[in-house]
Image (cartoon, rainbow, N blue to C red; front, side):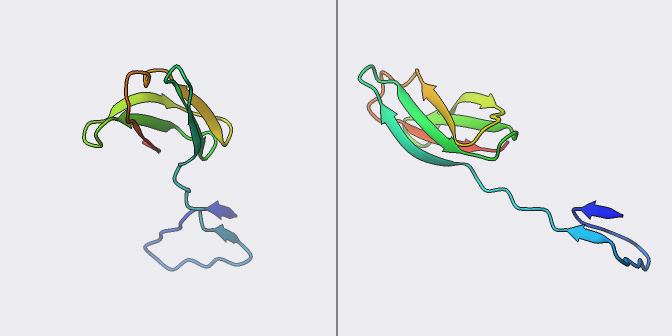
Length: 98
């Protein structure tokens, strides 16, 4: 038998010559360099875990957040452009696995 994860039992269990692998912990998404173009668009580079759903949000005051996108990037780092940032002088971003 081969298990990837945790084992739970209510009685005694003997594991002889079986492989138990502790699941790896997910690294949270992180931002690389960002760039604001002359038209106000912001290009973001996000290091993420490929094939996991990623939610990207933005705020101008760190209190109210707006979702820019919910996507499942197949590569890391992932590059995206915020085309809604042109009118804001300050813009904050956060990314997380929902």
